[in-house]
Image 1: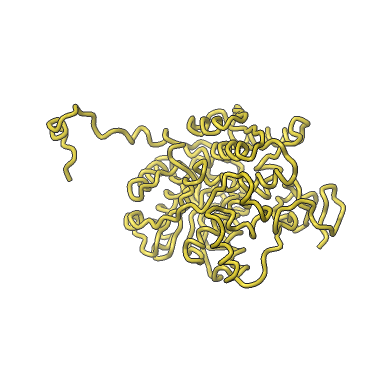
Image 2 (image 1 turned 180 degrees about the vertical axis):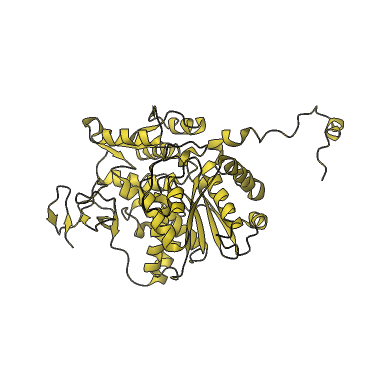
Length: 433
């Protein structure tokens, strides 16, 4: 099939880079195809580009066996990703295959009888799902000859880029809002790359990076969530693959996913659809629910108002990793929520904190504020009867609570401070049932 080159001329030749089954870039709006390259917007309609594949053919059973025999990380799904076949042999942070926790204690608390699971991505190398997307972006950066890895970030991505660049032997320079949580700042800086705070919110940072990418200063730079965005986004599909494999190669009935840019939600849906098309899971209905914090809820507001477009907001929430006021994939999230019979909802900062503590108390999982948003929305929708408690439900926790300690520090302190004696322990009324 003819595709467009970077310059816009047509060609039928094979891509010049080795990114495995990736065949071209395809516009999500008009369907025009382009050769693989550091592109992110369609030259015809300015729609977003995503990776199109020549996916494996043949027996689903053989493909399942091939996947199951692979490494315990995202490279087990290399035949479905834009990476070379020998990707597992290259220096990378090798994220993925994190735990799918059957959350029976939490299920009892929420009245869920159909099976409740937490996909806990805090177990990744830098303790967030961003390691997945960056690992894919690194392979694209290598293929296109970039020497510097960069990004605009609300925190987790900055750390993931720093770690992945260090492991891959690349230079890194990442950009963050100036007022991020200190834990995320330290984690991004410790890997030795350049970390630059920008006065403003994430949308200001992202605009700055878009300018830098067209400047000579940005030559040779791979911005994972700008000029490498089509490849970067594919890393989120691995959450869908893992969830289905860990459920015994079946789709969940319902899944609740946090929304920042919206890319994770759209790519999880893409992953489900690919597994259906390949015959790896049974084609049956599933519902996707999106979760936002009330202080940054442009997609939720559009969903409730019945709009097809998302009106930008100025973020004001403790869930800073989700604080993107103008989410690029917002309209596509609306489409998916409506197509699958799901919804998009939001919760207050107080509900976020309550949900963080609920997950910790019931399942021993300390999620960051984004995880509190997701569980808070799940709880709200269960109580409202929107999420069916009799169906299998998955809640996605995208990061580690150690990164957002300020959110719970005021209400999570020592029960008591006593002298080192049994009498003092008894006098404080401690240790009794």
